[in-house]
Length: 243
Image 1 (tube, rainbow, N blue to C red):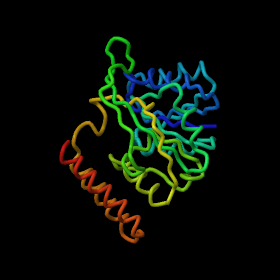
Image 2: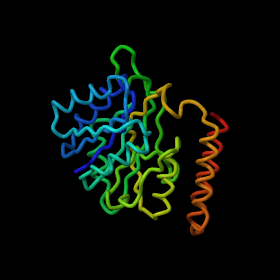
Image 3: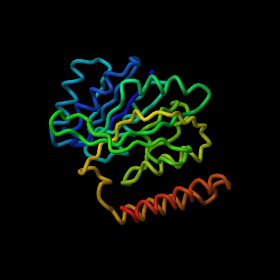
Image 4: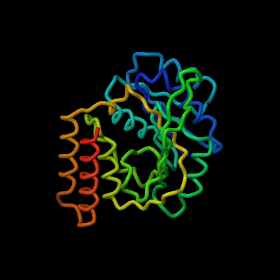
């Protein structure tokens, strides 16, 4: 079974497309965990309407505490041997789970790429593809999405709560653990441009904080670990300067 965890906060414009992409997966043995992080719009009502139609959907609500807390909450309820994360404003191609499941034998997680999409104002679905990208090595993408994990490989990990760029720290911990990765030539994760997302605008203090947290992780790490962390710091710093 694959447990797919979706943190939700005021995502009513995107949530239907996201949930529908999950229930339409060609791989049917799924646990769909929707974590409502104190939404004040119609997100919870939308989630409940789909849960009434599909028994694989489970909804957990919490006071607004951020994406990290929502993902950690979802991990507590995950029952599958495999774990995936999907953001509420994104979606998956129908064969995403099937393709990743077929590739995970012998490794701890499978990494793939994404298509960056615009949201159609008419159909409320991902439409125009702006670009697409496949990572050339395991340390290129810091998002926890676009991966299928063995639950055993991340059971000791959690998302740092109180951080905006928390996905970077989760990925750093994954890499430092020595988890084995396989990259597949596939771009089935539909990453939607969302001008309202937390990271769509600069958060200067949060950026300093996450970079310092990465530096702290480098202390005491092996030579290989230090190389991975400093590579991540350099790339992230470059991204912050450009954005």
